[in-house]
Image 1 (cartoon, rainbow, N blue to C red):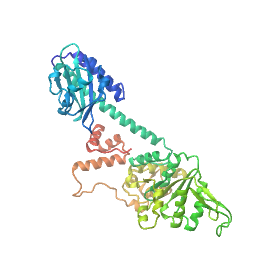
Image 2: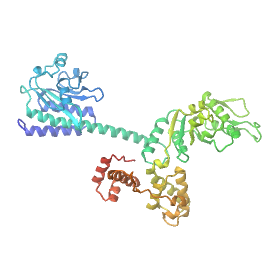
Image 3: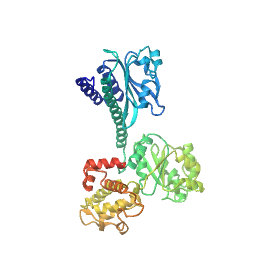
Image 4: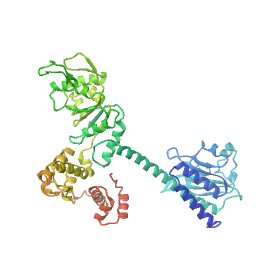
Length: 498
């Protein structure tokens, strides 16, 4: 390294590293670094130009010198000027006499009044991706920059690249943590930590504050009423009632009375006046479960209430105002019912302002251990039994089983198993026969299994999932070190569910 003051070289790099670690704000970190570059290289000015990945233009992100403010609105095309040439060719450059170099963009000097004499510039790259250019202009104590200056600038450019990625990663993690905290702060009774549950809770967080109708779809037993409760509990209506109506449980001639109420003598058996669910839920949330089973005539009356906000009790001509938020749920495909003429299209669109589709349990298997232990605790306390754990054999079966009845089926299986259990641990003998016969899914040998790497990825993913994504425990089971496991997770692009 010719022409290098080693003491200054390492002191400058150390200073840059400290500046990078001193702030999580990208703008502040970069401004501090550019100021340090200008000072350490005893130059009149320095610039950090960032590459817009979409437009392929360079813009001045951080600038020092007398004309810094005038440069903030200037852009340079990739390949244009000294900075553009360096970014395009990914090569560092010393320009001893800028005014005589064809690559120099003289119109910037003309517009700002700054006279570029000598320029050094280095590309900013990170993991093969060009991010921009770092350039320094006009040394104060000599006519031109030398190779020692360029070597130092290249080292500083590497530090800037680290700062860019470090601050960007911090920003992304911080944003994820903000979202996660918002999800954690939600009032809900939903059990699970899988990505499917986190996405579901994030949607609840977004829609709960606003008075829009929500249609919750999904297979039977996926927890639609729990999600409806979560929407209510995190809405401005949470201090008022949450009222649920099962549209399947009542015959069509009674559901109208159930929803809107009736007056005495309105029909045979109406011995007294009665409030309907709309009236009871006033100011709160009305949950219409299995809306797809509602009769056509009641659908028409429900649509009128949703559109006009008014209704009458059965047998009365007095109009009442409806002040409820509607959350409906169904395990049927309403769009298909509309096409068959079994469900009103206008009501479908009125209910379907926002749709939430809940995943079946077989698509969130990492939540099964949490759910199993949750139900075990509930029923052990309820039945006053000293059952406190689930055997690994049972958990293997639970993970392999497809749960056509979803969470409701898992709950019922655990309930029955607790009743039958004679020890502190649930074992295979306590399960129903159809679940006991479940084949634990290993990896049968077939011609479609793929490569050895495919098998290794599948096996690591399975062990991670079965151990609730705990890396240390997984590494112990696989008999590999934690760093080796981390490397394989990165190699195979395995997504860790939380």
